[in-house]
Image 1 (tube, rainbow, N blue to C red):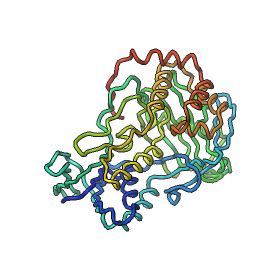
Image 2: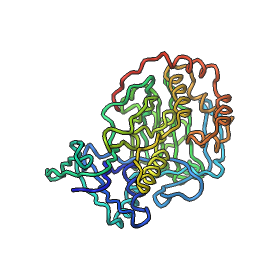
Image 3: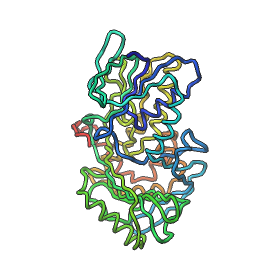
Image 4: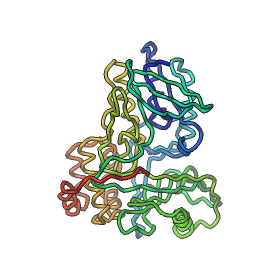
Amino acid sequence: MRCDVVIIGAGAAGLSLAERLSAAPAGHGLSVRLIDAPAGPLRPRDRTWCFWEQGEGRYDDAVTASWNRMRVRGPRGHLVDASTGALRYKMIRSPDFEDVIGRRLAKYDALVRMEGTVESIEAGPDGPRVLVRTADGRYENCSARWVFDSRPLGSLPRARTTLLQHFRGWFVRTDQAVFDPHSVELMDFRTPQPENGLAFTYVLPTSARTALVEYTQFSASVLPADRYDSALRAYLHDVLAVRDFRVDAREEGVIPMTDARFARQSGQGVFRIGAASGATRPSTGYTFAAIQRQTAAICDALLKGRTPVPPAPHSRRSMAMDAVVLHGLARGRIDGAAFFTQLFSRVPAPRLLRFLDGDTTLYEDLSIGLNSPVLSLLRSAAELPALPLQPHPAP
């Protein structure tokens, strides 16, 4: 089989790229094959993506809920309650995203979707060739001009600092009206803190009685499974004073937060996209917005006949600042709870969100830096060049 574009993986990155190509003006002539992982361990579990944007968005019909206020609470209960201004903080659940994109792709005649396991990607005389083992055990060869691979990496690139953002969330339903459906609880630090790193609870309310309540740590290693459940139960009982609740669903995950540099090309005509190309912001774990910027640029290059090398998801300045923060958190030099609480207390939320998207000027970045623990950050920055690059297994 021969086509112009092969997309491997139907997660956020693969589906976003396929959808953008399907929505391109008619007549561009690009044929696309999208390869889904079969049901089983290679297919990601249901998950939730959050991001922020101004006004109506491309995927609003998949949005579960959105908010224009956010809260950060310090360890002793200090509350920062801020408006996001023209930005809205949006939540999408992966099954809803897959359903919406699936309906859009069904209208695109030049796209063929198949389930299978990619066994290899090899160079061929007419471009890369993808060998796929289908669910019924057959093998198919797909030759293409361009291949975009969104599969998770088997190991992370070497880095000076790598932390893990590991979490478990409960979709809870309470008898009492305990949640504010107009505000997201971005970071509630009223939970015990690890020695190095930080821990917080993240609350995404979908009504006064329903919410995703998620316990999250930034640290070097994951916890035993029962520790997450204990932390969630303690938060609901002791902090929110909720006695009666039901858990409708659960989600969990591990996101690497690393200052590594990810390769965006793995062969002639073969490119990595999404988290596999470094789309995850090292200091926060947010990925969805960077995927949208990346896939939009790839689509534009394909339609204009240019070599579609994926752009770097984050600027060099953003990556350098994140490396300093990660090192400070990993060494215990930065008190994570105090650091983030102070930032949200002193910097307007819209500017801070633009900063996290890499959309601020150098002057704005410097002003944000001055509202951080400057001496600790400078010491971390001075140490970084001498640190060796270390391998780290993929979580």
